[in-house]
Structure formats: C-alpha cells, structure tokens
Amino acid sequence: MVAPVYAHTEDDTFVAVRQIVGDALQLGSRLESLERDTPLVGNLPELDSMAVVTVITALEEHFGLVVDDDDDVSQAFDTLGSLTDYVDAKTHG
Image 1: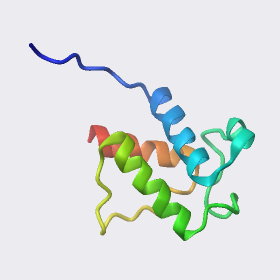
Image 2: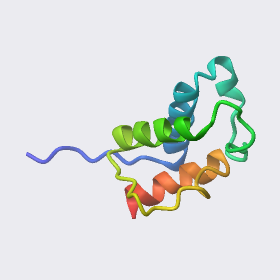
Image 3: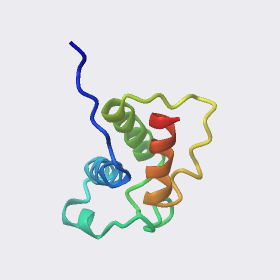
Image 4: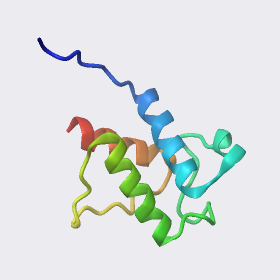
C-alpha cells in the first residue's frame, strides 16, 4: 500500500515558516502581524546570527530539508516571503 501524498500549497508553507520564525524568535502575538513582505534581517531585533541558525535548524527539521554549508541564505532572510520561497525551492526543487 502506498502512503498518501499530501500537496502543500504556498500558503501552507508560508504559515509553517511564519510559525517557525515566530517560535524561534519568541514573537508571541507579534507573529500575526508578519506578512510575506515583512523584512526579517535588520527589522526584527531578535533575529541575530544565533537566531538565524535556530530558524534554519527548525526549518530543516520541520520540512526535512538540508541547508548546505555553501548555501547563501542571506537573501532568503530578506523577507518572510523570500524565506518561504527558499523553503519551497529546497523542498520542491
């Protein structure tokens, strides 16, 4: 018997990425104000270099993806949307 395949939409990915970022940064109720165009690095004071590592680790665990050491994730952390797009590319590409 083959396990069912669940299609994840971009919205599903965005909601999951937003939740992961919110949990990692302990944003609490501020989480709901994050949109696709919300800037991350430089905008959220909680998002320092250690928090970036925490977010990457959580994304790897949640989505089963691998962020290689030579991946340039700096652009992925420009906005919440670019981070979602990065996750989509890693999981579907």
